[in-house]
Length: 304
Image 1 (cartoon, rainbow, N blue to C red):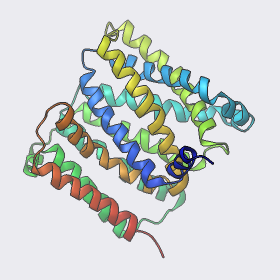
Image 2: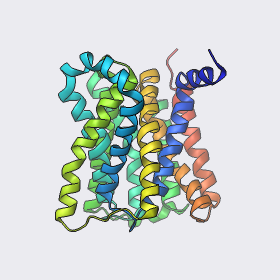
Image 3: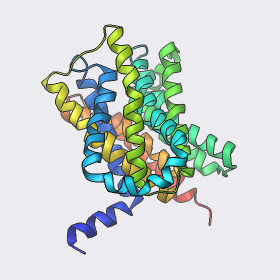
Image 4: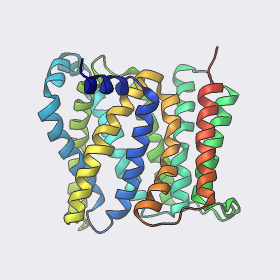
């Protein structure tokens, strides 16, 4: 086995590295979403990213998909629903909700996904939820709140719940349901399974683009829009999702999704570097809270 193959194998078998890379790519997607305003419309961005990702997968991963198809075919309706929800509907609802709520509300509410996963795991499988895990999740959520309120947590008294906030809650629930469903996915390779869901995400995105065009809100990508399209297709869509599926396979949905709260904190760091937004003390404090919460829930939350 070559050195390069060894590195790839160790990366693919290291859930913490996979989750870290996933959060980095998703945080980059936050920056891309902000830059994309006026450069490409939201539904076209959702559909375009899965179109490019699907083409790449056809070229490089068609053999694993064809080998796994006999195992996937009997479960195709469930696979299609998972791809529709986790890859298309989640982003569609989230992007639309961003037009109807504040950035503070958006940042706070998206941090509830791990809570929904823990609750869903308990409801579906009676997975024990220890007090330490709840404390760790609360600590990571506190870090997200610090970022969202720019260190002024007292501004929460002015929290204004809107239709967009309900949409963000719905998107968090959709993605949490998708994460939970990965536990009982069809028995196939992660790559073959991902190819099937990518096609499902692409097919299910077409009606949304059509509706966007009929509403007169379709914005064809500019040069920057095309760059953003390729970035979101390769990193947040292709690599991040594949890494997340593998991480869930290795450590389960509850532990994997807890790391999701690192994304808004990393997004703040990327925004400071790439968009020249200020990185202040509360960002550093929030980062410590999030990493501390993840450590508490993961290390102390384990049963002997």
